[in-house]
Every structure is written in C-alpha cells, then in structure tokens.
Image 1 (cartoon, helix red, strand yellow):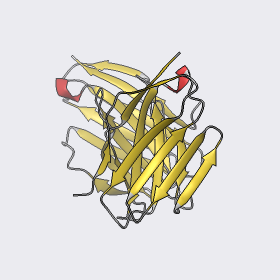
Image 2 (cartoon, rainbow over the protein chains, first blue to last red; image 1 turned 180 degrees about the vertical axis):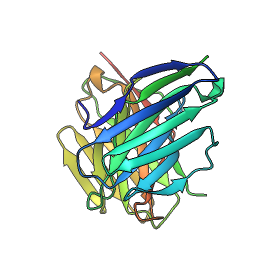
Image 3 (cartoon, one colour; image 1 turned 90 degrees about the horizontal axis):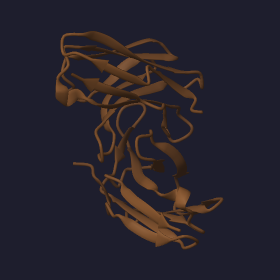
Length: 113
Length: 113
C-alpha cells in the first residue's frame, strides 16, 4: 500500500469529455507533483506544487489544468484530450529534510478514445 | 541541459548473483540521489536514497555515490527473480524551493532462476 492515493485507477474518456484525476497524501508533505509516463519511458514531469503554490509548469498543454485545494490534495483536470495523451499519470509528494525524496502513488491509467 | 544517463539494458544475471546498476549525472550541484524500482505496469517505488559520498547499505541493496566522478550505482546482492524490474536512477537538481528530480531512462534487470 502506498501513502499517496490516486483515483481513479483506470479512466477511459472520449476526446470531448471533461474528467479529473485526484491525488491525496497524509504524510504532511509540502510538495506535490504530477508526472506523465508512457510505456518504456521514465516519468515526465508536468507540474509541481510547493506549499500549495504552482512552482513548475513544464510547458504542459492547457488541456491539462492542475489544482491544489489544500496541502493534502492535488487534482488534474482534463479537457479535450488527444489520443497521444493516453498514458500512466503519476502523482508524487515529497518533503524537505529527506532530500525531497519523492513518493509515488499507484497512478491512473488513462486511455483516450 | 541536466542529464542522467543509465545503460538501458537489459541486464541479465543468474539468481543469487550480484546485479550492478550504474548511473552518471551532469549537474555538479546535485545533492540528492535516488534509486526507484518499477515493475511493469506499476508505479516507481523508492528503494534507496544517498546524499554523501561512499556506500549506503539496506538489506540486499547497496548504493554507492562518488560526487567527484558524478557517478552513482546500485548493487543488489543475492539477486532474486522478484528483483526483475526496471531501475530508475533519479537526481535532485537544485532549482526552486523543492528541487527537481531528473530521471534516467532506466535499466531493465532480468534475474534468471
């Protein structure tokens, strides 16, 4: 069991749908991350929230919209996605004092029809 | 361009042998180094972190860091078939209040019974 919880585990959506991915951690970590991972590739950083403020946006298309409602929650809102957006979406959290070591959730497997 | 380089493998070792995984990084300012294990279809799992030169042992795993050579390695003793996975080297590069993990492309390890 991981201490970073992501929901849903699987999501299939059409290109016109709007959906959200959710991530929750109760470790008191103050940095939270969204990654995208395609098969046989390393995780690719999308967004970083540090102390609930967006600190890094790696030039991600606007069809992906992050939100950090509080220090424990992280959302990724999806709209008008493309088939190439199909991937494993990973949430991670980290804390100062541990070298900012990141702990990952189980991920959401997203398929765009 | 900050880079983390790993041999993609596959690295094949017999059960009971020592598996040696290597990683080099380009940013001399890097301060935190991590090894993640990722089983096929699963999320990365943090297995080792190392912050200072030398060796760090945890069970069958030993991480080695040489900052002068910009080199970090992972040794797995008494390799088991359950160790078969992709191993991702990650380096926390200074930048922002929480740093930023740079991942290598991963080395696929296969342990043969």
